[in-house]
Image: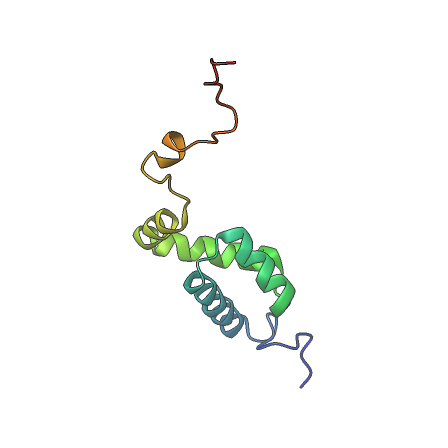
Amino acid sequence: MHHSHHFGPCLHCHPQSYIRMVQHLIERCLLLHMNRDQCIKVLAEHARIRPLVTLTVWRELQKENRHFFQAYFHSISPRPLMGSCIQRGPRFGRRKQHWK
């Protein structure tokens, strides 16, 4: 039996197994705190999974696990540091040299 993929089951020969494999790989990406686009890129490059397949499985997972994904996206999104960026902005632009 010859597979067109070097990694895991064939999408056409064993679609359920293939989808489960993609789901497992997406879950591994989530453990590494990747966003959707990073996951799609990594699976395309390293597991030869077409982006449309990864995107489709991702969307199904997101539908089935809405609350998990809401919490996940909140946890990986960059957060402001309680206003410290505003208070401690760049100092090189200030002109307090009135004594010249």
